Amino acid sequence: MTYKGFYTQCLVILLRAPVSLRDIVDRLRAFEAQTSELRSSNWVLGNPSVVLPFRADVSGAVIVDLVDRPWPDHMGDAKRETELLAAWLTGHFGVTWPFSLKRACLQSWGWAEGKTVPLRNKAFLRVRSSYVFNGPDDAPLKPTDYEPLSELKFVTRVAAALAGLPQAISYFDPAGERVWAPKDFTEYFAQAEAQDSLPISIWCNLRHVNLKDRAEGWCLVDTMGMAQLDAADHEAIFPSARYKSTEVGELLLNMATYIAQNGPVIADGDTVDGPGDLHWKATPAEESQALPHRSVIRWLPMDGRPVPPAVITAPNPRTGA
Image (cartoon, rainbow, N blue to C red; front, side):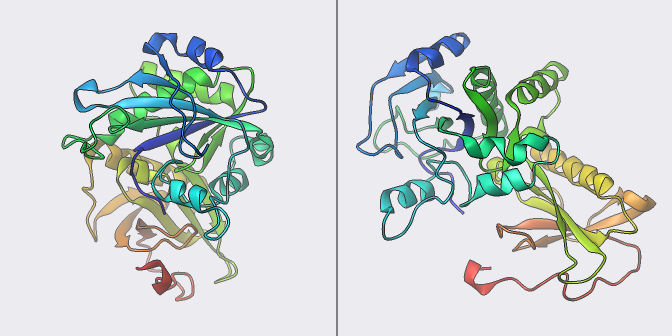
């Protein structure tokens, strides 16, 4: 996994063709956009950009740049693409893992065309936040009063404005491994803004994994994307014949929303009311059961049914867990 480095958030608009800097500025007039001609020697680090003010008191900014090539889902090779790999590791593509777009498309449940359309991208816009882009050389990567939720909301507002470009084919959250049709994304986000509700489904994908290769009749539902909010994801493991995965997913999104708003307040052994009119028990886990491996809060139904040992495997020592 990468981490919050030079950039602290990254959302992406996948395009069928490149757009001009003027097109970007026109879509972002409400944000007091300014163009920046600064260009890196390598496309992965930066291109001519549109810069939007955000928390100027701590040298904050949101930077939008156009990459006129497909999304690099593999994120580089240690021998042949060292600059791409280094850029990924230092946060230039968000808090994400290799092949995040592929997994996002495989787990695109609310948008059937999302399984194929995003993969056809020929270019993309990166919408990234930073506190060192315009700051002094010794500026910290994050201010002492860093608050990821308000930051992510602002970055999402910018992405929503850009999703209206005619060349846009998909909204893509690399950290949340989430794709949306541009129109659906903008309408859902506008509704959430109007109702002052948290659009957690924009940032977190809800994924379904059948565990029949480990034990027949068991499955897993998890969230993907809480690292953007400096929090753990959630996963639930349960017998599929007894609980509806849609209801389990709703429980996990509710827990993700609660954590986003209140911080890491769920402790080992805490319980909540959940599907089946039962308590579900929380256990922090260093390593998730589904790829990519990351820390999670694991939820199990307290129904007295033992979980087969093969369903919850031990952490992989290669991940450092």
